[in-house]
Length: 155
Image (tube, rainbow, N blue to C red):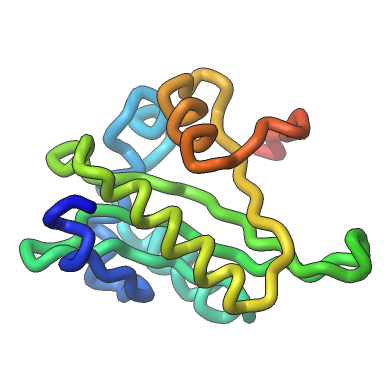
């Protein structure tokens, strides 16, 4: 247990959080090329869509000094696994100034707890093949690379 464990709280994001959230999304080699931190209106529209969809939430990790992490949790109903609900975790980021303090580990644990409370039978996520540190992180938390993910860019 680290000193931040008892202080770290997860809450639903509000529009005022978006500049920090977008900055975290853009603060790495992949995000820098695909995010547009100067155009917050894009992200405000996205947050409204997230909030309007049942079972979809953008969460931020908060310490007394402010927002230090984010992730999106989506509950997906399906037919497989006898109609099981799945928790999909997306867009996990920890502020570069707070990495190495096990904040990401706590965020994932809280997201898994939220998925379990929502009735999910499985929690899944994808991570870019180039994020080898992320692969080790998720494997350490018990995630297994059991499937090969594929994407089709529609832009």
